[in-house]
Structure formats: structure tokens, C-alpha cells
Image (cartoon, rainbow, N blue to C red; front, side):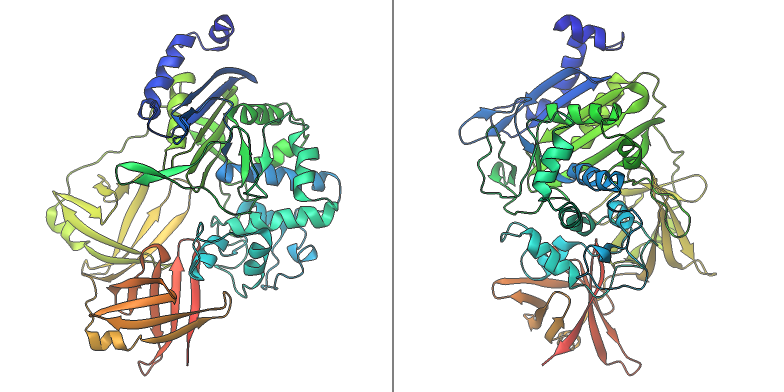
Length: 536
């Protein structure tokens, strides 16, 4: 076996070197006191490395091995997409069919939502998990079923944006696809997947989590940090399609090989066919896969995160390389691990992109400080100067570039917009994937309303699309929002009539010309603007 490993690896990296590299990358998890990760690597379809780090079950001391079953998170989307694309190949549906042909319960939204829109996150549908959280039941607080998902999605009378205009990741589109597969095929989604997707690819340890109470041999428990220790963080829900796939690194490598060998014919091409917005801009998201590049080489990949599971599956077609990482620790950077392995295994990668940063004039930096509001969701960013750098409160620094722009994070370029007198009016963030995110300058500092001003927001606020009433009250000088008995949060003033609500997002109020409050709005990541009206 060692001989096979050495022959399968590039000359610059032998089997012992790969083991040492992986051991270094996963060193933080190589313990009997932590959860961890399973890793698998294949070259041209032949597995060359598989190993487990950490524990599958901290209570009984079971270690993670390559045979350990873990949950895939959103990597499942390519399997769901394959099921749909097989029906397209069968001539039973078309990618440009109106979704309402198969899900007539869904309202009409003006422009037609097609199957293609669902597969590429361009439908405008709001994120179902945000919506149930806004009902007072965040994921993990009650059991959610496929029927629950359908019910909350079809209640939405409006969208985040006009169909096809933007890419905005949402699990709601993929949550509808299993229903479509069932209604078109006449089979349960589980049966269809078993017979048409898993079996032809040779997957023997892969199944949908359609019943979370089912006992699954060799399944790893999932964990999240609690102070200096760990707590269970399992997905107690019967939701599958957007995620909910149980699998092993070995099966994932088989899956990538099946796609490379075109076991499903032209489906392999469709999965990596990039979507196009109504503007004509092509995005990197395809159909359940992201078709992008890493250090100059093509990468077909997807990440996943469900409860305490964190995952990444990638193919590097020019190198004939597949890398799979499945972790059972919330927040484990599975994608980073995959790319560190790719760094070691792929020769002649392009250099890591660097930026020509400079020291900025302190007076210029001070001019840009203040509160900025994201145009889509009203998310709040507070910029301040710390040790000669412009920083985002709770986030990364903005490093000044020689051309006057700034750079942040993984390479997003930030450009401030100013008025004639140099006062900021907003900023544009140019993301590496080609998207442009715009923020409006709101104020030089946080809004500080009086208790009298807060009283204007007190009352009951109803949202018909999720059928929920939120109740606002003032308590000890703070505005408190109650979703249901025992579930409430404090609204932190951010900008005039706008508040930060922690995990619930941003809450803001609009007024008429006379200054009377007319509506309450909620924006949070994958829900752009949910409108509440005051009710007796």
C-alpha cells in the first residue's frame, strides 16, 4: 500500500511527507479530548490518503476514522441538483420550467421563478431558517420537517429582490427541490436518490437524514464550544435537500470520481455550468457547486455547515485531485484545511495574491469613521481607527492601498464615496467573486435616543408572511423585543430609527411625511426586508 501511495503522489511529496503535512494541518484535532475531522484524498480516482483526527464521540471515546459517518451540510446540494438534472435528462422537466408548474402553492411574484433559479440561488426566495427563527424558533429549538419548510416558503408574498437580479445564498430554493423530484418522479426523494444517485456512484455509506431519530452505525456526534469544553450540537430536524446528507470521506471521493467518469452523463457538465444574472453578469455559483479558481487552478467545490458539522469537498480537475474534509466541530475551517492540502499537492500554483498596502494619513482615516448601513439588509458596520488602521467593529482591518482604495479580508476591495467637501456618503465593496456591495454612511457615531424617543416604537408588530406578532416595550431605558413568551432580545440603537438585534439582524422603522411611524422592518443576511405593521 505504501508503494501505491508513493506512485500516486507527485515526486515532490511522498507518502510520509503527505502524512506529516496532514498531521500538521490537523494537529489541533489530534486529541482524545476534542472532536475532529476525517480527511480523504484521491488522485485520478485512486484514494491516496485517508485518516481521522479527534473523536467521533467524546462520551464513549470513539475515535474518528475514514469510515466514520458525518453530516455534509450544504455539500449535499450537488446531490440534490443531480437528482433534478437526471429528471431533466429523462425529459420529465426542464430547467427553465416555472416552479409553480410543480409547486402551485407558491405565489406568483411577477417574474417567473424557474428550476434554474432554485439551483443557482437567484430566485429571491427568503431563507427558511431565518423565517422560522423570526417566529421565535431558531434551528435546534424544535423539530422542523419538510412540510414545515414548504408551509413557511409558500407563505412568502414577496421576495428579497426581483427574480434573477442577484445571487443571494438561500436554502429555501433547494428545500423545494425534493418536493419537485417527488411530484415529477412519483417516488419518494429518498428512494429516488438511493436508486438513481447513490447506487450508480457506488456510494454505500451515504443516506439522507429524513428521520433524525434513526440510528446510524458509525455516526459521529457533532459538537460546539462551551467555555473551555464542548457540548453536543446535533441537527434535530427532518430537513433534507439543502443539507441533511450523511456520508463518509470515502464515499465523497467515490462521488467526485463518478462525476469525473461521467457516470451521469451530461449532468457532470451541468453541475459546473455557471449561472447568469439578468444583468448578464456570470457568477461562480453553478448548480449545487461553486465553479471558481484557487491560486490560478480551477476548483469545483462547496462548503457545508449544519449544527456542529463543518465540511468541504473539492475537485481540482487540472491536477486530477479530490480532497474531502468532514469535521464534527462547529466552526472548524474545513475549507482552509482542504486548500492547505491542495497547496502541498498541486505543483506550480500561482503565488498567493498580495496587495501594495501603505500607511494612510490619520486625518483621512478619521474622516471615514462612523456608522454605515448595508443597502440590501440594513446590516450595520461601525468603522473606527485603532493603532493607525481603519477597522470594522468586531471584524477585520481595512488596509490602505496605494491607489486610494482599501482591502479587507480575503481580498475584497473597499472604495469610499465622498461628497464635494470630503464627507463620506457611503462605500462600495468589490468582492472577489465580482459582486458589488454598497453601504450608506449613516452618522459619525451611534444613535443615542432618549427613553421618550424609544416609547414611540412600543407596541405589537404583526408580520403576516410568517404569522407572528412581536411586542416591543421599554425597560430600564432599553427597547426590548419579545417574539414569544421566554424569547426576547434587546435592540441596540445604531442609526436614526434603526437598531441592531444580534442574531435576529437589523430592525428599523419608517415614518410618513408627518413623522409618524408607519412600519417596522427586519433585515438579516438572507432575509432582506421583512415588513411588520402595528396592530392593536
